[in-house]
Image (tube, rainbow, N blue to C red; front, side, top):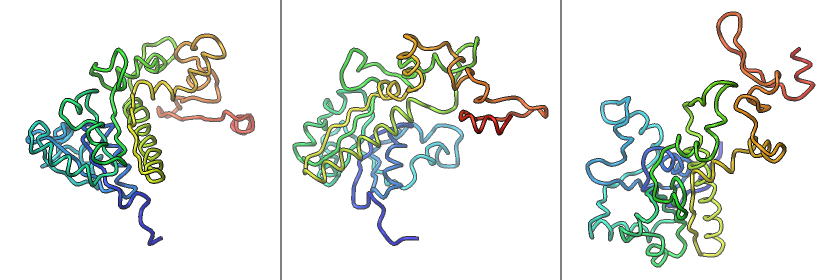
Length: 264
């Protein structure tokens, strides 16, 4: 037990994000002690509030990733809403938004506007394809980003079709964790220099950057190995999931020779 404050205590976050990548990022910041204010549009709010299964008041998914936060309703299309947001931004250390590139600028509360009133702000924009480039205005979800990054092609067994899993790799590794890492780096810099950063997170780019096994295979062989034949997806007997005699499954991870010999 310790009586020390959490590492992000005293830092304020304005969270304009919805659904999964941004809200889970700001949840991590809240768990580390940051004061997170979730800024939601009137009436609808974060769509995840109504994502089933539902409790009597909210979706359980929403409750799981939005604990430890406060919430305020603001119509950012109205003059009054913009002014309230700017006032909040003066007191904030971090802003996280997940709109398509250009939306915050059109609302009149983009990075250039906010940094003019708060030079130390760390302003993180999470989007599918980044702030610039030919796909910047395209909508998408985890499955689309994984496909463009080449990761979906690698998911599944040998000789079978690509398979979906109930773990959003692009949203979580590409979005949530990459954003969190960029924000924390920007915050360190802002504390040292008094100047913040614009953190541009492309979920597709960041997912691709994490595809270490496939990228290693590409460098070694000039091409990515077929689905289900990579070292960790069926290419070695010592690493896999095997059906057992009682109809269940056993996971075996014995890549090191000493563990493989011990298992055998």
